[in-house]
Every structure is written in C-alpha cells, then in structure tokens.
Amino acid sequence: MAAVTDHRVELSPGSATLADWRRIHRGARCDLHADTRAQVEAGAETIRRIVERGRAVYGVNTGFGRLADRRIDDADLERLQHNLVLSHAVGVGEPLSDAVVRLVMALKLASLGHGASGVRWSTIEHLHAMLERDILPVIPEKGSVGASGDLAPLAHLAAGACGVGEVRVAGEQRPAADALAAAGLEPLRLGPKEGLALLNGTQVSTALALAALFEIERVFANAVVTGALSVDAALGSDVPFDERIHALRGHPGQRDVAAVLRTLIHGSEIRASHADCGKVQDPYSLRCQPQVMGACLDQLRQAAATLQREANSVSDNPLVFSEGDEVLSGGNFHAEPVAFAADQLALAVAEIGALSERRIAMLTDGTISGLPPFLANDPGLDSGYMIAHVTAAALASENKQRAMPASVDSLPTSANQEDHVSMATHGARRVLAMVDNTAGIVGIELLTSLRGIEVHAPLASSPVLERIHDRVRHDVPAVLEDHFLAPDVATARTLVCSETLLAAAGDALDPLALDRSA
Image 1 (cartoon, rainbow, N blue to C red):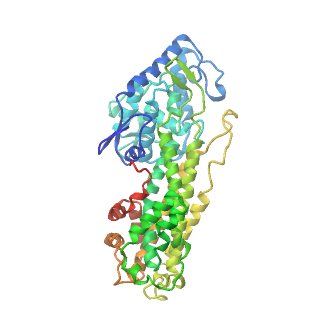
Image 2 (cartoon, one colour):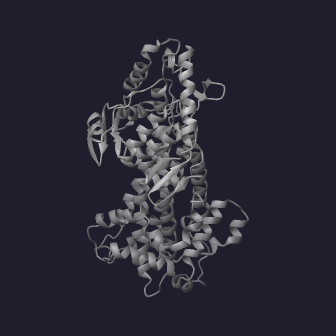
Image 3 (cartoon, one colour):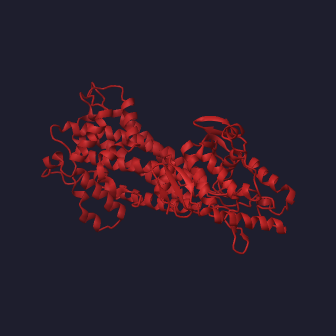
C-alpha cells in the first residue's frame, strides 16, 4: 500500500490506490518507496550485462519499430537513445495542463519503479528531482495514437529531462536547459534502453483519463444533488426511490443513487405538502434518476478500476526480467484498456448532462412543472431562464457528438509494423472538454431548481437541500427580475466543479464514492 500524508504520497509500484493518484493530481508530492531501488538496480544491471556480452536486444542495441533489424554499435548507444527522443518529440497543439503533466510524471516514476524497464536509479532520481522542483516539461496535447505507447508526448517529457525543448516552472515557460541549470540539475544523459523506457508507456493516456475521472466525480455527485432539488421544485414524488424497487433489479449503482436521493429529500416540507395529490407518475427525468445515474455510476466505477490497474502497471516494451537476464518483447504499450475506459467515461458524462438538460427543460416548461413559464418573475416582460435552457441544450448536443467511441478507430502507423492502435490518448483528452460542458449544464439546473423551490415558499425543502440552497445563495443571490445571467451561470458551474456543495451535503453522498477505500 502507499503511505499518505497530507501533502505527500509514498508510492509502492503496483499497489497505489485511486485515492493516491487523486491526491497527486490535486497537488500532493510523491516519492517511491525505499524498497523500490533494489529492483530498479537489478533491472539496470541486467541491461549492463546484455550490452557487455554483445547480445542483440530490441531497443538496447537495435533500431526501433520497422528499423529493429538494424544493429547499433556500442559506441553509439547513448546517441541512439538521444536520437530516439529528439525524433519522436513531434507533438502539436496546446500544452497539457500542469496538473496532468505532474500526474504523467508520477505515473512514469511508478512504472519505472517496477524495475522491468532497465533504467538506472539515477535516471529515476532525475525525474523525481524535476517533479519536486515543479520543473514540468511542456507536452503538446496531440500526437499520440495510444500505441506503441504515448510516444510523441512522452518524448517531450524525456526531452525536457535531457535539457531540450521547453518546461514550465511556477507557471512560467522557460528553456529546459536553463531551468535545469537554475535548479542545480545536469541534463539527463540516457543509458542503453532508457530513451525507449521513457517513451514507451500509456502514462499520458492514463493521466488524461484519470484527470477526467476525478473531475467527473464532483460533477456527478452534484448532478445527483440538483436532481433531488428538481424533484422538490417540480412537486415530484420520492416513491420511485423506494429501496424495494431497486432491490428487485439489483444493479449496485442504481441502488446507491436511489439511497442518496431518499436521504436528500427526507424531511422535505414541500414533499409532504403534496403527498396525497392526484399525480400518478413523474416524467422520466425525475422518476428514472436511479436507473440512469446508477448506470452511469456503474460505468464510472468500472472505468476507475481499469485505470487504477493501468496506473499500477508496466506498459513498457521490451520488458526486463532480472532473474535469468531475460528481455522479452510484448505489447503492454497498447492502450486498449485505457481507450475503453475513456469511452465509458465519455458515455457516462454525456448521459449525466443529457438527463440534467431534460430536467431543465421540464422545470422551464410551466405546462409540465406547474411553475411559472421559464421560471420568470413576470412572464412576458421577463424571459427568465428561457435561453439558459437553450445553452444547456447546446452543451448537451455537443457532448453527444463527442461521445462517439474512440476505441473503434485505428490507423496503421510505422510502415504497418504498428498496424492496430487504440486512439486512447485523444479518447481520454476529449472527455475533459465533455466534463466542462456537463458542468455547465448541471450549473444551469442548479439555478433553475433553486428558483423552482423558492416558488413554493414558505414551504421548505429537506434540511440537507436547504443547507445546499443557502450555500448557493451565498454566492448567487436570488434576483427575481431579468438580469445579466452569465455571471450566475459561471458561479454555479464553479460550485458544481468544487467540493463546496458536497461538503454542505455532509455524508449524504457517501454511497456515490467510486472507490470506497478512498
């Protein structure tokens, strides 16, 4: 297991938890467990003996990809690895965020720490020193097809370690050589196989998918909260959340979401006021929340489990087995598991937004909700949330376009040596944009559901939902007349992306955890 303090995570390669990676993504420092050094040095010693004996091994003393049949002289082995890094650093697009790059570097350290990549301990120390000093290589977001590993983006990481290209230090972009010198670090000189070990792997795809997962966690939980608020705003029923209904179907996510909705609505004066009304059934966007959001939760949990395994894995090639001095070529660099996980995340986050958009449409349609048209104070003179719903619809539609699975695509590369690839990298990267869209939708629902609840005053919602109501109104005061709405939407979106409302909910949302041990 990994030992964790408030600000540091000690990683034992192969056993880090989802919570460890979450903390690192959010700024915690990381170290490799002291026991890691022995296995790293054993792997490096295996590579040294192979070179000494003159044995031809892919990536150690041969060319790469389709050029693997070219033998390289011992005198050129350092140049071979350096050339590999320079030739592969061809990424394009905007740089990855600092948070993602930190996670990439931590994932790479954990992978190398298994000792199966053949790198020297000094190389790991160099990467760790950069991470400690916040010297973060500038990694363009585009250029990887998710096999053979994230070659182009990881080449930019390796180049920065070698003093080539650009890095970011405290948010400022600088030449890598200058930043290393200022920190008292020499540029990394690559030993046999080390360039390939740094380039091969799924760390960029995995970091992007984990970053998306960690953002979705908050948006998902807040969408369950806004869904509960919408139930009360529309005078909906909590009967569809009865445990007996969900026990008969048995899906864990469905049961957990239903339990949370029951807790959130419990004690609502609004609910009690219409307990014996003549309405038989609510629209699906209210009634089927456990079924839809529960299915999303199950998908998120499955993706989380896949990504946790991937984060703890070695996705290099070839792999070094120090017992027997064997180096075996395989395909652990193929990011198909990450691609599938990213597609699961994309489908889930699109559905979270789609269901929220439907509730906004219901709340603003007075013929269905019974609320004032568009929740306007003076309908006609005021337009209320008419166009806020249009914005939500635009975001939901964009997400549907982005939700097409990336994993079904493949385009052969490297003269057909790499004839099937995963497309995991952009598959994971596109999820972050989708999360941003869904947060906007849920933020709009937060505003409309609160306005709907306020129509029913002096009746109050449940104690939990009233605490959330008061917390939102602290940042977004209620203004009945039409006014400049964009700042309200922006603030609501920020709340949806934060822990603020989740803290106000207390332990009511605990059943939604992706990793119960977190």
